[in-house]
Image (cartoon, rainbow, N blue to C red; front, side):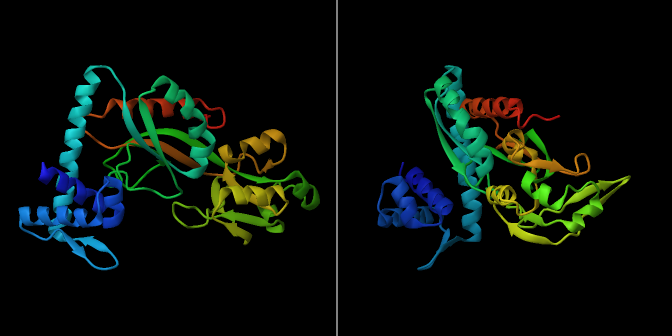
Length: 303
């Protein structure tokens, strides 16, 4: 029992990167956490962690031991979930990760229905504009850009939203509506820096049989989609965003698209799960629920 407690402490220290934070989550003191790790190191006969006053890091043996422990604990969790599934009850906590725009607009508003249907399931919704390490961070379900570099994950594509060029009616009235790609040379360009790549999204436009990249220099660059929308609404210029991000503003007439049918590219999202021998039922029902919500939403529907 002490070895199990020690291994659990070791895993949490690695995942949090901090003795104090791990101890706080486990309800023990940092001194107790240190003792747990020391007992495990004595047990296996090697040093698992390099400790300093500022940070901790895994030794080579520690990294191998960590992967083995995580896999063993996951196998135990899977077996417990398999036995629970036999009783047809769905309960437990689902750790769900999604970027800000997707979570706030589409996922969070739908979770009330999920919790009504599955009252014994709780949701830990992690909202952040970065790609998490799904396995290392213990993410059960992720609604994330497609594709991800980790090919070991189960992926079910659910969203494919095309890019559109938009501007406010006031801006277009003052500066004219571009009808050809060359017309963009006479307009103000505002750009979004992708949080996935940290690079400015290129404007790829179809010109006859060719696809060209617009070389117009941006007068404004931001890494926040909402800020880009506000800039467009204020008449700052023409911006490139996914259709789902601007649909409410197109519907209300506060923004208008330009060069329709000439803008290339789309942003895809998939529902990701870890590859497991037995996917817990709470994870399956969440993944199915999200697929239903996102695939049927009118602003996300693939055409």
